[in-house]
Image (cartoon, rainbow, N blue to C red):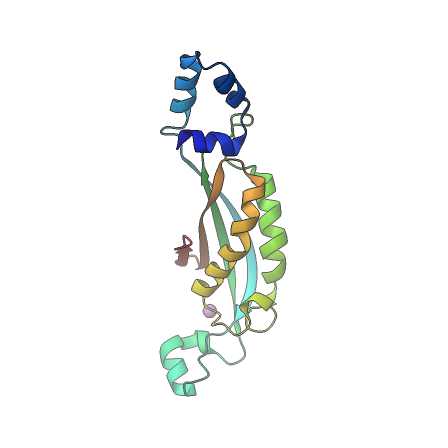
Length: 176
Ligand code: NI
């Protein structure tokens, strides 16, 4: 397990351990640096978007019964707060699990640009044909970000996407 992480990181310590096998102290220090060292790093971003929740298979009455004001025919808006969490051990070169500037730039370019001031039902290609619920949106955001986070972190991976639709209503997705 430890060696696996080691190989992935191509850490400079790798050469010291592999080529000086007698140096057990180095190895012990290295091994323990991965224990009790799991950190969760989060970045919050904001966007506004409109939507409506409406099941076309149901009557207007049933839609209003289930979705309430969210079924309003001419849309309504929300101030969304998106919190993206990366889980990992700090990179020994920087002390960072992930550079938050890089994470912010990534979230803005790949997600916020596509959602901010848009109508989720009609303007956003990755929401086409899907229920414009916060649950669906959180899952789609995960699908976009998960493969793109790997290149900006050596020892981290996407842990969760948390999406606030209102200050009191939010969903979380862990890729499960
Ligand atoms: Ni709504």
